[in-house]
Amino acid sequence: MGLSRPVTAAALRASPEMALRYPGEVELRRDGADEGEGRGFDLADLSAGAERTFAASDDAPTIVAWFVNQLIPLGWADEGDGWLSREEGQSFLARVEPTAARPAWLR
Image (tube, rainbow, N blue to C red; front, side, top):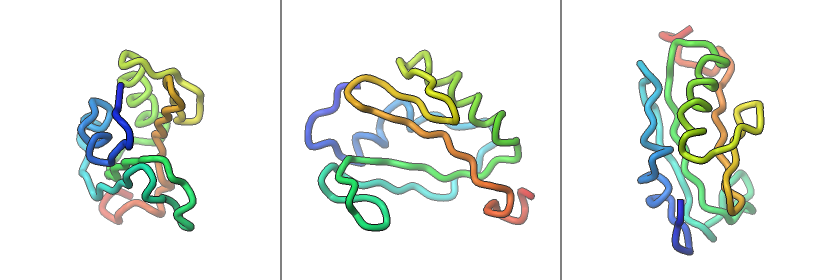
């Protein structure tokens, strides 16, 4: 995905990767930061980022495998443990929170 600099969170959210929707998911939150803005607890990460948080009733391996299978045709390489990478230092993480972090109606 050829992004112009500085990369914006809006450009990342408009990408095919961020358009992926896990079957039956309920989106809970969207967030992001533009390149140079600062991310993380100390705002030290100056790379652009975008994230979506959603709830789903399937287990972690099933959800992560679904995202990996959708992302490989888009040019991503599976690095394991939910991490995928692509040219120019791009990375994608499909992370599943433990059950305790999920809303009560999904436990």
